[in-house]
Amino acid sequence: MNIDSIKPYCTSEEISISESRQNLLLDFYLSDEEGYGWIDGEGWLASLIGLRNDILHGDYRSLYLAWLHACSLQRDWEDFNKDVSEPPVPAHLDTLNGALKSLTELFDIDKDILGVATKASGQEADEP
Image (cartoon, rainbow, N blue to C red; front, side, top):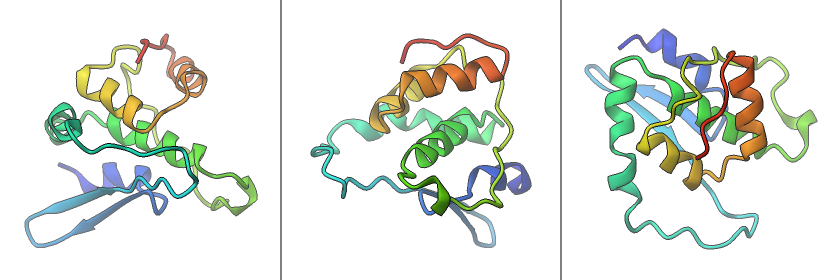
């Protein structure tokens, strides 16, 4: 796994990466402080576990989706780091596997935002 390929997606508090001698730790931070309702943790891990293998095999769609979510959390776009540029849009956003669909559901990624991102990559969005 190439850490330099992952770093562009880790541009906010919501997505971070840390490194030890032999390991990389990706932290996806999801907070519900804005009062959107309770997120029940039961059952999510099993549906998301496949994302690890995807990332290990160079499939960064989950990182891009998490980045989209982090962008959508920015209520005041002026507060968003102006030095942050959009990371590479991964291929195949039009075909989301079960784990990616679960991620879009957990992060409540707006279908319109996903559709725009998918079109930017030259593909059509798959219904999450």
